[in-house]
Image 1 (cartoon, rainbow, N blue to C red):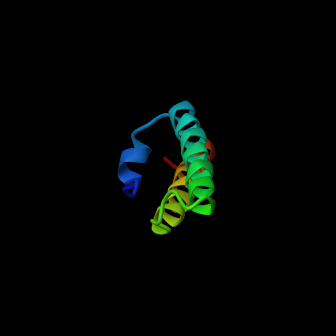
Image 2 (cartoon, rainbow, N blue to C red):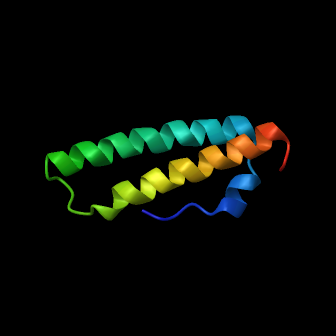
Image 3 (cartoon, helix red, strand yellow):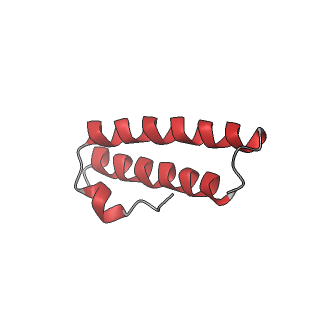
Length: 68
């Protein structure tokens, strides 16, 4: 799981970013489920996904405000 770069996110449109948030949330759910059922041992992936979602939502808020 790699970190999403903010500069890459700022190049995308709001609908693309909203779709990306939905995808990340689905992946976060799967990662949490797999962690509970001990299918994965990489606990850091959950944290990275949460941070990616926050990063994307921040860029969406900036774009809607008109700062970017």
